[in-house]
Length: 332
Image 1 (cartoon, rainbow, N blue to C red):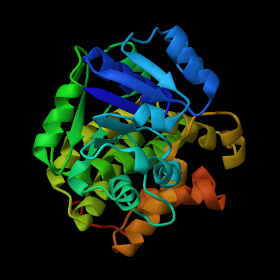
Image 2 (cartoon, rainbow, N blue to C red):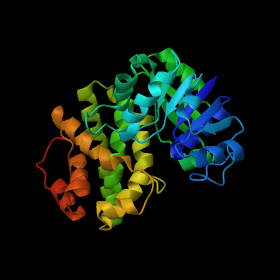
Image 3 (cartoon, one colour):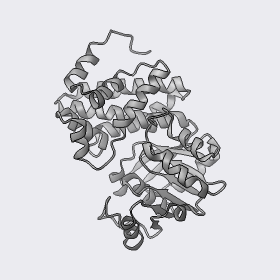
Image 4 (cartoon, rainbow, N blue to C red):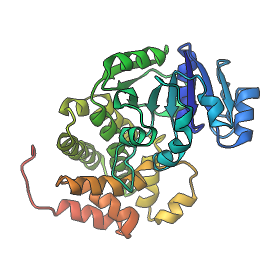
């Protein structure tokens, strides 16, 4: 089996390693030629994990068409807001029955579509060819081969099992699921909740606050998921609670650490200038808020994160707004 990994960021690099360690031949696409040459000739990604030697089964190219040619698995590992434009250029090079594997965790700004919907719309492939990988998969830990699990979701269970086999490495245990909607929403909303968790951490707030944010964040994720047709049980699993806990609690999480910068009083522009990695929740909070409003779903934490990021609300003001909402029954 051959795989193309389109994107040479931290998770794309780690996922390429997983595929190679599971026995798959991998060609990575890197936008910058010098990165592709380094991966191809030195087995090193100079921008991410430069001290880790990549497996010999991995090569790279700065030409997407070359990477995609003949690939059975085409792994999409670009920032979610760039997917549509990139895939429009790549779609003509896809093999007729290639599985398109999405590593992206976001909701498109202009359309409020999930990444699998953008893939289907842009590439013209059938929905059952799109596979979503989601779960508590912090890339630095995967690169260190620390034991982890993930979810491989596809409406076609046989295809999910094919990808499951392709990513079963000694340190990564994948589970299949047919709930693509739930897997994608869990992966997208947890980034927003992790921003809130980071803000609370920087404010010096304690474990009661943090546990409340995780629990109520999961509740609003579930509400949105149910409104869109997801299986509620998905949110109790790896793509829901598992990913949420890891992304909120780990200092390796770019969304949590970005939230900490905001909680220390930095503006959005200051926080963005100090980090080169994409904190998906910063943009996705806008599209998730719009998606929730479209379906009349109450998502108060998401609303306040959006106000902090894009309307200049102070973290103290956001906390005050959350604590002074009208009293409600817990399960609703």
